[in-house]
Amino acid sequence: MMDPASAAGGPAMRTPVSELMTRDVAVVTTDTEIHELERLFLEKKIHGTPVVDTDGRLVGVISQTDLLAWHFNNGIDGSGFYEAPEMPDPEGVRNLRVSDIRTATVGEVMTPLVHAIRETATAGEAAERMLRHRIHRLIVVDENLRVRGIVSAMDLLRLLPGVTVERRR
Image: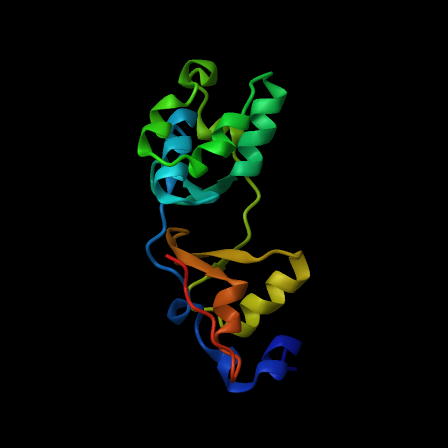
């Protein structure tokens, strides 16, 4: 029996996610310090990233939401972090309150539950998983759980006839 996502999208939904995913994905390790992570988010203009162990295997994900919750739970005002990307000059990165962040690591803050999919999976399988879990992106991994990329709902929309969605970089 064909899954509903494949039936709705036809042959395009059999496209491997490896052909759709964004490949240049920043990753951090569990021992990356929070102040380094926040700088990475600001410099790359991203809101989350996969977390890998010392062997490079996917173990979690960390997002701005995780950071905000961590700041709140530790009595740290994280509002400056969320304003920093809007600052007109790159000097704003240096104005982060690093002293308040201490030496907490990504491993202490990350979400260990990760929605991942193999690079050999189809677009239909990715769409079905996104729908089932009500998420907008999946981390793409190889057979050894090493991060290969990220596939998003926007990537899947590009498969639909007549839909033009430009990639943001």
